[in-house]
Amino acid sequence: MSLLGGAIAIGYRRHASPLHAARGTVAAAYGFSLALAALLLGSPILLGALLVAVLAAAAGAGVVRALLYALRVGALPILLLCVIVNALVSHDGLTVLARLGDWGVLGQVDPTLEAVVYGLREGLRLMVVSLAILLVVCAADPGDLVRACRRVSPRSALTAAISTRLVSVLADDARRLAEAQRCRSAPIRRPRLAILRATVTGALDRALDVAAVLEMRGYASGGRAARRRHPRSRHDLAYAASAAGVLLVTALALVSGVAGFHAYPLLRIDSGPGAWLLAAALVAVALLPFLDRRGVQR
Image 1 (cartoon, one colour):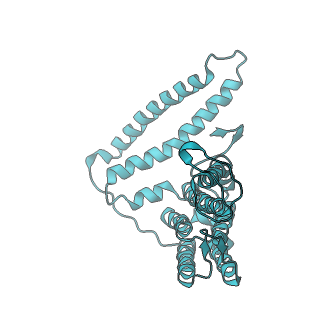
Image 2: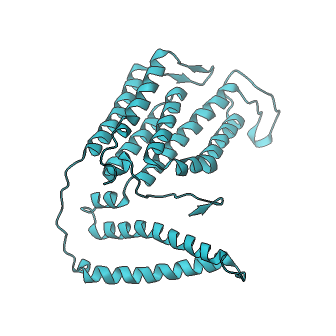
Image 3: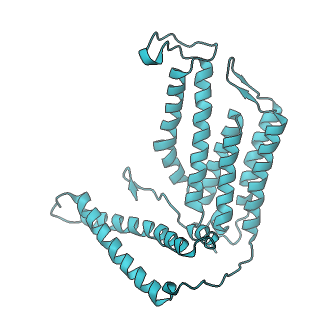
């Protein structure tokens, strides 16, 4: 899809990367482990390390443009909103930055350093979680994810697989229609509406074609397809081990308490060698699988 004048693909597209070479379920587990670590950890140092790991993983997977776009238009405004709201409504903290007087419903507004830092921490946490989930969207094969759930409801899994595949197809159709529209010498009245109308019409035509093909292949008979087993690749094992390693380092940080964070009543961030060692371990464990690029074209 075309966004802000540039073509930025938000969705799954196959790239020659180790993460795309792994199974979709494994890639999803890898991304969700980073998101879960961000939800459990409270130290800004460790959250910053997770942010570096997610962006570096996106660069290794070839989807960093999508994440940077989401960071610019979504995550950073949410971070700013968290800081502003928490600074205005929180009455905790002892280090007053300014006395802004009585704001009616909000009462006495005296922003404190502790409230600002706490808002930054929560905004950073939301940023890491959202980017990690977007990494899953861009790098995990939706077909693999749907096949993993086919035992629960095979027909629903088939519907979801077709729907996720057609989203990118229709986006490509809309982009090509827009390019063809710009080549016309005579201007078109309401060009966006015309593109939308043509895209929807094409979607209906594609739906009829897909339904006919599925009927010819016997999907209407209700029978279950035989389950095919594929051996696990080294990329599957590497990213599964990386996800387990991220959760192990997270558990170690929670148990040891060397990377603590306390915002109220006075700000205290544990920034000793242990915290930086755990941060380095998170980044290293998350990025080690990207070093093996053998077989990424498959």
